[in-house]
Image 1 (cartoon, rainbow, N blue to C red):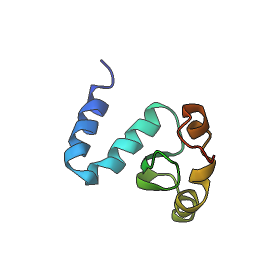
Image 2: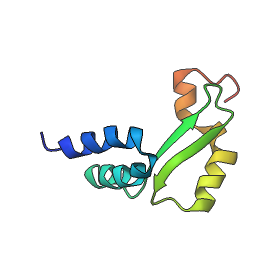
Image 3: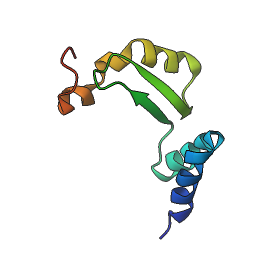
Length: 84
């Protein structure tokens, strides 16, 4: 399998948060993306926190966490955000 190293890095990052950025860099490269991120979000969609990100400046991270999370279209599809 060509991406065994990525899977291994994912499992290692679960125990060592400093490995999230190297994982995201490799993941973004594989999927040919300029950015990648890992976030946690409430089911209601009223808050989110970016745990790690690459290719995303701090102002954009702040804007997402403070405002754009409530506009996340995936919440509407999942029907878990009644006010979205």
